[in-house]
Length: 401
Image 1 (cartoon, rainbow, N blue to C red):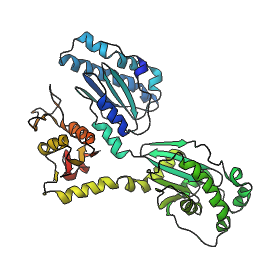
Image 2: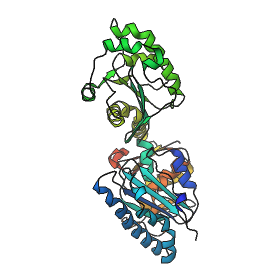
Image 3: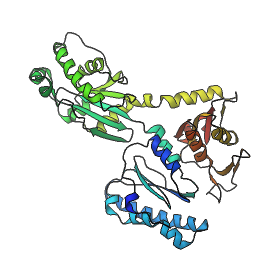
Image 4: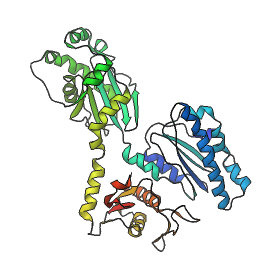
């Protein structure tokens, strides 16, 4: 049995899970496949619990491998690269809120994830991926663009992460872009500290004012924003929504200037210069959350409309065959819930285990299986709390036909 080296460990990620990550994990070689999920602490004395927690989970992995028929020495050899993480101080210094580890005799991947994860270990023929669908569905990206005549800051964010990006070519303030406009701006700008900024940032529709001193600078501001917009659009994804933040009169000026198609009509007004990326993300989330979750809400409404027509179901006996056939348009699965059983694609038959406390030999989580098959066949998967699954069931599906 080959021993994987640390060179095979994936570099840490603090960004959201992408479709490509899940597709990659589904195609990786090697059997058996071991999935480990655990919560982690970012900082403080609690971080000392992180390697201890992993060490305890590895005891469970060893036990499960031996129960599957693997010799104890072979199981220990397979787990060698993961055991090395326990004593790797550098690895534990850069944690997020959750850690996922996937390994087999040929694969070793680690993902630092921006949401806390329940402890979970599974030894199976494929990786357990349902917790990742939570991020794919809920931790969707958006931008916060903080505007002032002194600087322009682009924050790439999700609900759980925020990072200020350095974009080449963006003017570093009006002095660089248009000369002495800063001096004229300062005559009308009210000074404010970062504490004042926190108090005065507010949600505001992006509408124009008239007859103010700012309007006299409109032509120059438009030039400035044109320069900035051209640089920004070389790096921004045009399918990702943008929340503008800054002094009130600037926001409609930028919205009328930009060629980005997803700038939202509501923005954050006030002095944003003293605010951290995380503070801007939290304020913008209230604006962008309804936009990012609109598809999920519409899918839940559609489920209700189609229930009783044969185009929607919450029965696992109907959902599993439909997932394998590629008939599912949208699937809701309950986060943190597992439905242990088996599915025979030839007989098109799903069966539940009598004991639902843990997976038995040959069994798997049917919710995870339905999610994976739906994903591979191009359907949408929403892994959400059970109370957000239509009818409060473990799973619910809208069928294509």
